Length: 48
Image (cartoon, rainbow, N blue to C red; front, side):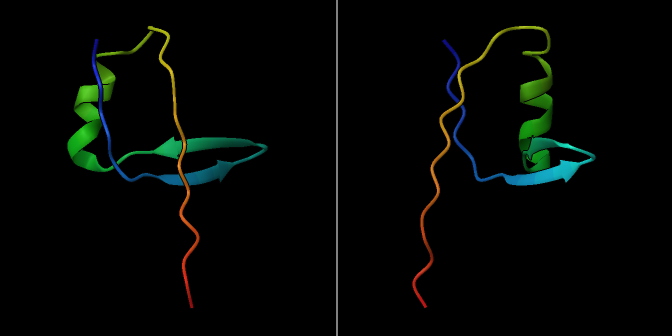
């Protein structure tokens, strides 16, 4: 099992949304290319 936890941005290209990880995680994620993964999205509301 591989578990990676990081903050990422959600970006939109055309009509699709993508999770954009930080550069230091892109190589680790690339090793999982073609495999099914489970994604857990957490969003904390910012207090003003």
